[in-house]
Length: 262
Image 1 (cartoon, helix red, strand yellow):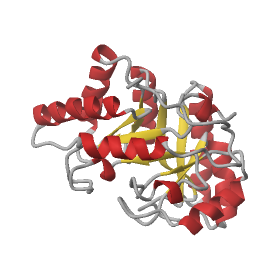
Image 2 (cartoon, one colour; image 1 turned 135 degrees about the horizontal axis):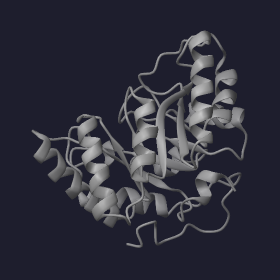
Image 3 (cartoon, helix red, strand yellow; image 1 turned 135 degrees about the vertical axis):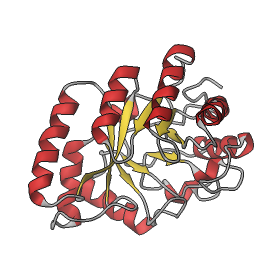
Image 4 (cartoon, one colour; image 1 turned 90 degrees about the horizontal axis):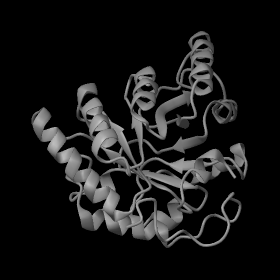
Protein backbone atom coordinates (compact mmCIF):
# COMPACT_ATOMS: atom_id res chain seq x y z
CA UNK A 1 0.00 0.00 0.00
CA UNK A 2 1.20 3.53 -0.76
CA UNK A 3 2.38 5.83 2.01
CA UNK A 4 -0.41 8.24 1.16
CA UNK A 5 -3.28 5.79 1.31
CA UNK A 6 -2.05 3.95 4.38
CA UNK A 7 -1.99 7.30 6.24
CA UNK A 8 -5.76 7.80 6.06
CA UNK A 9 -8.56 5.44 7.12
CA UNK A 10 -10.95 6.29 4.29
CA UNK A 11 -10.84 4.24 1.11
CA UNK A 12 -10.82 7.40 -1.01
CA UNK A 13 -9.46 10.31 1.06
CA UNK A 14 -11.09 13.74 0.79
CA UNK A 15 -8.79 16.73 1.33
CA UNK A 16 -10.63 20.04 1.82
CA UNK A 17 -9.13 23.43 1.01
CA UNK A 18 -9.17 26.21 3.60
CA UNK A 19 -8.89 29.40 1.52
CA UNK A 20 -8.64 32.07 4.26
CA UNK A 21 -11.26 34.47 2.97
CA UNK A 22 -11.96 37.52 5.11
CA UNK A 23 -12.08 41.29 5.45
CA UNK A 24 -9.28 41.56 8.04
CA UNK A 25 -7.10 39.18 10.09
CA UNK A 26 -9.70 38.73 12.83
CA UNK A 27 -12.44 37.98 10.29
CA UNK A 28 -10.15 35.58 8.42
CA UNK A 29 -9.50 33.60 11.59
CA UNK A 30 -13.14 33.57 12.65
CA UNK A 31 -14.13 32.21 9.24
CA UNK A 32 -11.27 29.70 9.20
CA UNK A 33 -12.24 28.26 12.57
CA UNK A 34 -15.88 28.02 11.57
CA UNK A 35 -14.94 26.31 8.30
CA UNK A 36 -12.67 23.85 10.09
CA UNK A 37 -15.60 22.88 12.32
CA UNK A 38 -17.89 22.37 9.33
CA UNK A 39 -15.36 20.43 7.26
CA UNK A 40 -14.22 18.14 10.05
CA UNK A 41 -17.76 17.37 11.19
CA UNK A 42 -18.66 16.59 7.57
CA UNK A 43 -16.04 13.84 7.61
CA UNK A 44 -13.17 15.11 5.46
CA UNK A 45 -9.89 13.29 5.94
CA UNK A 46 -7.77 16.42 6.16
CA UNK A 47 -7.91 20.18 5.79
CA UNK A 48 -5.36 21.89 3.56
CA UNK A 49 -4.33 25.22 5.05
CA UNK A 50 -3.54 27.55 2.14
CA UNK A 51 -2.83 31.24 1.55
CA UNK A 52 -5.30 31.38 -1.35
CA UNK A 53 -7.00 34.63 -0.34
CA UNK A 54 -5.01 35.31 2.83
CA UNK A 55 -1.35 35.73 3.58
CA UNK A 56 1.33 33.70 5.31
CA UNK A 57 0.37 35.26 8.66
CA UNK A 58 -3.12 33.79 8.27
CA UNK A 59 -1.64 30.35 7.58
CA UNK A 60 0.55 30.61 10.68
CA UNK A 61 -2.35 31.71 12.88
CA UNK A 62 -4.52 28.82 11.68
CA UNK A 63 -1.70 26.33 12.22
CA UNK A 64 -1.21 27.62 15.73
CA UNK A 65 -4.93 27.20 16.39
CA UNK A 66 -4.96 23.66 15.00
CA UNK A 67 -1.93 22.61 17.04
CA UNK A 68 -3.09 24.13 20.32
CA UNK A 69 -6.88 23.78 20.22
CA UNK A 70 -7.82 21.22 17.55
CA UNK A 71 -5.16 18.48 17.68
CA UNK A 72 -7.65 15.92 16.38
CA UNK A 73 -7.89 17.67 13.00
CA UNK A 74 -5.51 16.24 10.42
CA UNK A 75 -4.13 18.94 8.14
CA UNK A 76 -1.72 19.69 5.35
CA UNK A 77 -0.18 22.94 4.14
CA UNK A 78 0.13 24.60 0.74
CA UNK A 79 1.94 27.92 0.73
CA UNK A 80 1.51 29.31 -2.76
CA UNK A 81 4.74 30.60 -4.28
CA UNK A 82 6.76 29.44 -1.26
CA UNK A 83 7.41 25.69 -1.21
CA UNK A 84 10.14 26.04 1.39
CA UNK A 85 7.70 27.88 3.64
CA UNK A 86 5.22 25.02 3.32
CA UNK A 87 7.79 22.51 4.53
CA UNK A 88 8.94 24.77 7.35
CA UNK A 89 5.43 25.38 8.68
CA UNK A 90 4.44 21.74 8.25
CA UNK A 91 7.37 20.63 10.41
CA UNK A 92 6.84 23.38 12.98
CA UNK A 93 3.13 22.75 13.48
CA UNK A 94 2.78 19.00 12.96
CA UNK A 95 1.05 18.86 9.59
CA UNK A 96 0.62 15.46 7.96
CA UNK A 97 1.60 16.59 4.46
CA UNK A 98 2.45 19.43 2.12
CA UNK A 99 0.93 20.12 -1.26
CA UNK A 100 3.21 21.60 -3.92
CA UNK A 101 1.51 22.91 -7.04
CA UNK A 102 4.32 21.53 -9.19
CA UNK A 103 7.08 19.00 -8.62
CA UNK A 104 8.17 18.54 -12.25
CA UNK A 105 7.81 20.33 -15.55
CA UNK A 106 7.52 23.90 -14.33
CA UNK A 107 11.20 24.86 -14.41
CA UNK A 108 13.89 25.00 -17.09
CA UNK A 109 16.51 22.20 -16.80
CA UNK A 110 19.16 24.08 -14.81
CA UNK A 111 16.69 25.34 -12.22
CA UNK A 112 14.92 22.00 -12.13
CA UNK A 113 18.10 20.17 -11.11
CA UNK A 114 18.54 22.53 -8.15
CA UNK A 115 14.87 22.16 -7.23
CA UNK A 116 15.10 18.35 -7.37
CA UNK A 117 18.08 18.34 -4.99
CA UNK A 118 16.31 20.70 -2.60
CA UNK A 119 13.10 18.66 -2.61
CA UNK A 120 14.96 15.40 -2.04
CA UNK A 121 16.68 16.94 0.98
CA UNK A 122 13.40 18.23 2.41
CA UNK A 123 11.74 14.83 2.03
CA UNK A 124 14.69 13.07 3.64
CA UNK A 125 14.57 15.43 6.62
CA UNK A 126 11.03 14.51 7.72
CA UNK A 127 8.19 12.02 7.37
CA UNK A 128 5.95 14.54 5.65
CA UNK A 129 3.91 13.26 2.74
CA UNK A 130 4.13 15.29 -0.47
CA UNK A 131 1.21 15.80 -2.86
CA UNK A 132 2.77 17.14 -6.04
CA UNK A 133 1.30 18.65 -9.17
CA UNK A 134 2.44 17.95 -12.71
CA UNK A 135 0.93 20.03 -15.54
CA UNK A 136 -1.07 21.64 -12.71
CA UNK A 137 -3.52 24.51 -13.24
CA UNK A 138 -1.87 27.90 -13.84
CA UNK A 139 1.64 26.39 -13.73
CA UNK A 140 4.07 26.95 -16.64
CA UNK A 141 5.56 24.09 -18.65
CA UNK A 142 9.23 24.97 -19.02
CA UNK A 143 11.14 21.70 -18.74
CA UNK A 144 11.41 20.92 -22.43
CA UNK A 145 10.52 17.33 -21.54
CA UNK A 146 7.57 15.22 -22.57
CA UNK A 147 4.60 14.69 -20.28
CA UNK A 148 5.77 11.13 -19.67
CA UNK A 149 9.25 12.24 -18.67
CA UNK A 150 7.91 14.88 -16.29
CA UNK A 151 5.37 12.51 -14.74
CA UNK A 152 7.95 9.80 -14.11
CA UNK A 153 10.19 12.39 -12.47
CA UNK A 154 7.18 13.48 -10.43
CA UNK A 155 6.65 9.92 -9.21
CA UNK A 156 10.18 9.99 -7.82
CA UNK A 157 9.64 13.35 -6.12
CA UNK A 158 6.36 12.93 -4.25
CA UNK A 159 3.92 10.47 -2.66
CA UNK A 160 0.98 11.27 -4.96
CA UNK A 161 0.54 13.17 -8.20
CA UNK A 162 -2.19 15.83 -8.23
CA UNK A 163 -3.89 16.29 -11.60
CA UNK A 164 -6.13 19.22 -12.58
CA UNK A 165 -7.73 20.83 -15.57
CA UNK A 166 -7.20 24.42 -16.67
CA UNK A 167 -8.36 26.18 -13.52
CA UNK A 168 -10.10 26.30 -10.17
CA UNK A 169 -13.53 24.59 -10.15
CA UNK A 170 -13.03 23.47 -13.77
CA UNK A 171 -13.49 19.77 -14.41
CA UNK A 172 -10.28 17.78 -14.63
CA UNK A 173 -10.53 16.13 -18.07
CA UNK A 174 -11.08 12.39 -17.79
CA UNK A 175 -8.76 11.70 -20.71
CA UNK A 176 -6.00 13.63 -18.93
CA UNK A 177 -6.46 11.61 -15.75
CA UNK A 178 -6.49 8.41 -17.81
CA UNK A 179 -3.25 9.36 -19.55
CA UNK A 180 -1.64 10.16 -16.19
CA UNK A 181 -2.77 6.76 -14.89
CA UNK A 182 -1.34 4.97 -17.91
CA UNK A 183 2.03 6.65 -17.44
CA UNK A 184 2.44 6.36 -13.66
CA UNK A 185 1.07 2.81 -13.49
CA UNK A 186 -1.70 1.24 -11.47
CA UNK A 187 -0.11 1.47 -8.02
CA UNK A 188 1.03 5.07 -7.75
CA UNK A 189 -1.62 7.38 -6.21
CA UNK A 190 -3.33 10.01 -8.33
CA UNK A 191 -5.32 12.81 -6.70
CA UNK A 192 -7.94 14.84 -8.57
CA UNK A 193 -7.17 18.42 -7.64
CA UNK A 194 -10.02 20.43 -9.15
CA UNK A 195 -13.59 20.31 -10.38
CA UNK A 196 -15.05 17.37 -8.45
CA UNK A 197 -18.70 17.73 -7.42
CA UNK A 198 -21.09 15.25 -5.82
CA UNK A 199 -22.64 14.45 -9.20
CA UNK A 200 -19.31 14.06 -11.00
CA UNK A 201 -17.34 12.21 -8.31
CA UNK A 202 -17.85 8.70 -9.69
CA UNK A 203 -16.60 9.61 -13.17
CA UNK A 204 -13.88 11.97 -11.96
CA UNK A 205 -12.37 9.40 -9.59
CA UNK A 206 -12.57 6.40 -11.92
CA UNK A 207 -8.79 6.50 -12.43
CA UNK A 208 -7.82 8.29 -9.20
CA UNK A 209 -7.41 7.52 -5.51
CA UNK A 210 -8.18 10.74 -3.63
CA UNK A 211 -9.57 14.21 -4.13
CA UNK A 212 -8.69 17.80 -3.21
CA UNK A 213 -11.82 19.93 -3.15
CA UNK A 214 -12.57 23.57 -2.44
CA UNK A 215 -15.22 25.32 -4.54
CA UNK A 216 -17.78 22.50 -4.40
CA UNK A 217 -17.88 22.84 -0.60
CA UNK A 218 -19.11 26.42 -0.78
CA UNK A 219 -22.58 27.90 -0.90
CA UNK A 220 -22.03 29.33 -4.39
CA UNK A 221 -19.90 26.40 -5.64
CA UNK A 222 -17.24 29.01 -6.40
CA UNK A 223 -13.97 29.76 -4.63
CA UNK A 224 -15.29 33.15 -3.48
CA UNK A 225 -18.19 31.60 -1.57
CA UNK A 226 -18.51 30.42 2.01
CA UNK A 227 -18.12 26.80 3.12
CA UNK A 228 -21.58 25.35 3.67
CA UNK A 229 -22.36 22.29 5.76
CA UNK A 230 -24.84 20.82 3.29
CA UNK A 231 -22.45 21.05 0.37
CA UNK A 232 -19.56 19.62 2.40
CA UNK A 233 -21.60 16.64 3.54
CA UNK A 234 -22.97 15.98 0.06
CA UNK A 235 -19.47 15.90 -1.39
CA UNK A 236 -18.08 13.66 1.33
CA UNK A 237 -21.09 11.34 1.13
CA UNK A 238 -20.73 11.06 -2.65
CA UNK A 239 -17.09 10.03 -2.34
CA UNK A 240 -17.75 7.65 0.55
CA UNK A 241 -20.34 5.84 -1.60
CA UNK A 242 -17.68 4.95 -4.18
CA UNK A 243 -15.65 1.76 -4.34
CA UNK A 244 -11.92 2.30 -4.90
CA UNK A 245 -10.76 1.77 -8.46
CA UNK A 246 -10.06 -1.91 -9.29
CA UNK A 247 -6.38 -1.36 -9.95
CA UNK A 248 -5.72 0.61 -6.79
CA UNK A 249 -3.91 -0.43 -3.66
CA UNK A 250 -7.07 -0.37 -1.56
CA UNK A 251 -9.38 -3.37 -1.43
CA UNK A 252 -12.81 -3.92 0.09
CA UNK A 253 -15.46 -1.34 0.84
CA UNK A 254 -14.93 2.28 1.87
CA UNK A 255 -14.46 3.12 5.53
CA UNK A 256 -17.72 4.80 6.50
CA UNK A 257 -16.43 6.63 9.53
CA UNK A 258 -13.96 8.99 7.82
CA UNK A 259 -10.95 10.42 9.59
CA UNK A 260 -13.00 12.54 11.99
CA UNK A 261 -15.21 9.75 13.23
CA UNK A 262 -18.27 11.86 12.38
